[in-house]
Image 1: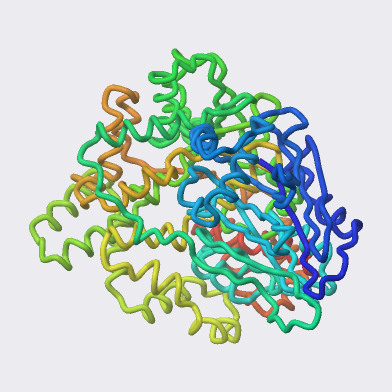
Image 2 (image 1 turned 60 degrees about the vertical axis):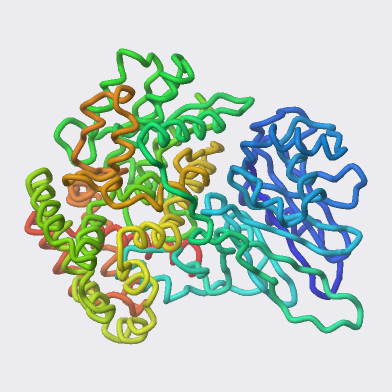
Length: 617
């Protein structure tokens, strides 16, 4: 797990050493153990290393092939590298290191771009062919590892994070108002190739690219030749037939992600997903000395899952806890915003930030349950998609039965409200979301509402539960993975996600609806798979929290009231042209009096303004 960076001068001029140094310096947290650099014929590559597999100096990057034709910088892990290594040995390759990096480089020599389909892992890498003077880069299937780039003054700049790119831009960065609109209106980021910076784009998940520096006298358009190497819809396999098959593959995925030369722990929330990982580690892999890390808030407070986490106390001796609150958030707001470099629409990722802070010093690798909600319909609004699916197929009896089970077991209306919302046209879905944000400036709304298609159209407009799950992999999952990457790597920790093993995903998404939602309960196949392994109170949990926090209470604290009012009254915030500050102040006043809960909006205002001040102003 590392950080990579690079510059390609399209005119072939030399990349200066000082430029690469400026890029790797802001992401040293991604790789405190080592760093390296390569410069040749208009290409400069930089690297910082967090040692996970083969801790010796042999793992240094940039790494060269044995014939020194190819050089690689690689961020991520290839979990099946031992199996690939054996396949490559049969083809005549020999190895000087025990690293997955060398296996990846040899795999490219053996199979070219086709080797991507053989990889089980998470990655963003660039390989430079010194003979052909061509770069090839790729990103993993679902976007677990990041890759950003910018086309700037006749050069291509890329990195694992945005600040290294900003460090060498020739101009001051500008805010991308399309991204800000989706952030404020839909609470979404990363559903397209845009970032919050006009000048910076991201390589899509499952995409690869080629780029050759311009040769003397040749004409060449600026940019990267990007194409999709992995299309989820075309890669779906026959679904699991039962819970036993699902459990077997989940256990295999977890076992692969134990491959490490440094300690591995688990981020334990007390929910179904992370608890399943812990339970399989205990039962299948006898990990009795396992370290777990949890955020708690106090009994009775929203987001606190101590009751379920404590069910593991008889089996775990190394359970670690941290309690974020309004004071820690106030103290950490600067580093947190710096770590993410883009606005985050909720304080949930801050809880994860603190869990990773807690894990540092105990382990270097963590496992967690990210991705299970998207693969197995873990969010309440997925009921709306399922109800819509049943209606569309004319299964009215099943629809009424499932709506009844939902209402009885959850005593909530979100799933039914979502059902009604998803039946609306795209235009009305957009209009209703905007009407909820009464604080938006009219000019800002009218300028961007007509361009907001991906979220209200693709994501909210999914015609069936199966399509909704696929669209969540395409348009929603990536922002969660980005936040996890930033939170973990800021603390020099590698986060691994067993539920996103492609073998699992490609068989889970085609499951029929009744294996996903059954009698008002989501993740039916996982619950069946974990029967006899997971504590029953967790296996049959009805509530869903994720990384929830009691942020509504936090923002009623005096220090936060002061900060929010100072922000809303500041000339900078008023001058952005995004928020009607008088309406925002009225909403905040009602929140402070306990008449409403607009904590998400409050956090978005604060984070957005602090981001402007740190990165744009």
